[in-house]
Structures are given as C-alpha cells and as structure tokens.
Length: 303
Ligand code: SF4
Image (cartoon, rainbow, N blue to C red; front, side, top):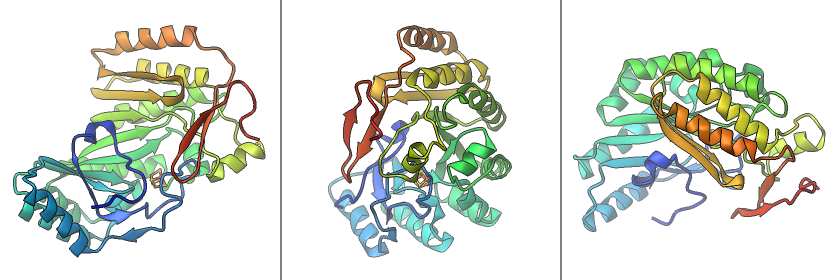
C-alpha cells in the first residue's frame, strides 16, 4: 500500500507490520502537533485494507506484530475496528499482538464489552499521548483529557489485560516549569505503571497553533538544558518498572534503559550532558509538508 502522510510510531513498533486503516488523526487538535495537520482525515475502505493484508500474505509475510496507523487508530467505530481485527486474524492467525495509538477519550468512549472484544482479538499495546502531569498544561495544549480521565481510561484497559505505554514530552510545560512537570508526571507514571515511556521531548514547528502562542508570548519554550534537567528529575523520581526511551533530536542525545536497574547509569549520562549544555536556547523548527529540519545557530528562529 502506498503510504500517505508521515509514518509515526514508537520505537518499540519499528519491526511491526504497519497497516494503515485511516489517513491522518481524527482528533488533530493538539497545539504542538503537525504530524497529520496537512491531511484530511478519512477512513480507508475495508477492501483496501484487505488488499494490503492479502498482498503481504502473498509475498510470504507472517507478521507477529501489527501496528495500526495512523494517529489515534483506536478511535475508529467499534464495529469497524472489530471487522479489521477479524480480518487480520483470518489472514495472520499467528499474529501475537495488534497495537495502535489511542487517546484517553477514545478509550473512555468504548464499553467494557467492546474493550474485552478487542483484547480477545489480539489488541495488546495502546500508546497514549500523556505528555504532561499537569492539568493546566494539558488544557493549554488542547489534549483531549485531564489526569482524572487518564487514570480512569488506563485502569479500564489494564483490568482487561491490555498494556498501556506512555508518550511524554519534556518541555511541554514551557520555560521555568520543567521540574514542576517532572514531579507531577513521575507521580502519574508511578501510579499508572506504563510498560514503556517514550519521551519525544518538545518539537517546535512553525505550522502549528503553538507557534502563534510563542509569537504572542503566551507560551515561552524551555531551553534544551531545562528539558534535560526535567528529564533528569523525572528519571530520578520514577520508581515503577519501566522501559524508558528519551530523544532530544536536535541535540542528538538519547537516554534509554530499564528502570529501576539502569537508573544510576541513565542519570550519570544526563548529568554529563547537562554539564556540557549551555543555557542558550538551541531551538529547531520544522516546516513544510515533508519536514525539512533546520537548526538555529543562536539567533531567533521564530522570525
Ligand atoms: S492525538 Fe496524537 S496525532 Fe492526533 S493531534 Fe494529538 S498528538 Fe497529534
């Protein structure tokens, strides 16, 4: 199948068979996100999805893991999602897990019976954009949930045997609030116990509503150094068993490992990086449908 848009999935899904069942994100409102902003959301016809399953089977494919794209695939109507899951089982009965992105609200809209049906048909990992531990930040960024709703949604999927994984974003609370966010997020993650935490760190785009907030002064981005300090504080406070993977694309830094056993090594790596990072903001921005990355060299990239 010709892939439309940008492939976006957690690193743990890099070896999965990526099966698009829709184009774009049905929510598409998070202020910082430009992944699918240029695409008109639409569901792909079931015949097209089946053709792709048949194509992969005909070339000898027998995937053990399938990732359903694009953003927020779990928000599909339950009947349609069940039809797709049944098709997958029919073509690939040996498939061990079917994973996808979900929003908290998309989970809350499903009944317990529906959640159980998905689980029986192989749905295992749901990747949730938790982003922040602070309700005012979630509201500002127009995420579709608050903490209370996230606790409820996660508890419901865990009770029926699905696994929850958290996407977070250091820097999301803005300049001067990194440590406050880290403390709140640590409490949330320790209580909810995600299997994986992926920190994509703040990614600044020119073509998202957040850019206007930066221009009008209602959002001040944190420096890369503050983002690293936020990540350090978060890792220090995490007590749950978690596979952690953190990116800082524009300063080419990544810290990953198994918590709690790798914590000291990860903290030492962060300490080393923080000691060599200046306070000067090093922002990067992305623009264009096909993102071309440009790096600022100390000037004001926002003009
Ligand atoms: S739900 Fe995910 S893909 Fe959709 S707008 Fe928000 S961050 Fe982007």
